[in-house]
Length: 162
Image (cartoon, rainbow, N blue to C red; front, side, top):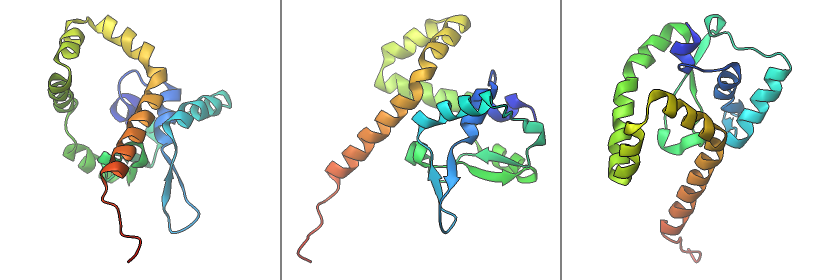
């Protein structure tokens, strides 16, 4: 398996290390404890500086999306054996399907942004992605915090007298 097939095109060693640093085993019952996105990249950079390298062709298990994608970064990858990975990959939407879903969602939320993105050249898109990459973990964390706050505010109050 090539890095492109597993981690996406243009993935660096630091990107690959960041992607596998999604959760650590907890202290009991095999519960995985998610690693906050803000911590993943700095950890990956430190591990890379210390000589850690990812070789997908030597990996025995591969990450697939967890069972609860709505949980965002709190949803650790599900790791599957090499022989079952193809089965999981077939059930995932293709990159083209996922891209179309994102475009449809963006068209509903901000059609002008979609038009701006579609008018960019590939080079401009890569430059913009590189410029925004360091901020993605923080943005995702803020989205998750906002979602959690919304859920707390919309959750019915439980009766304390019961």
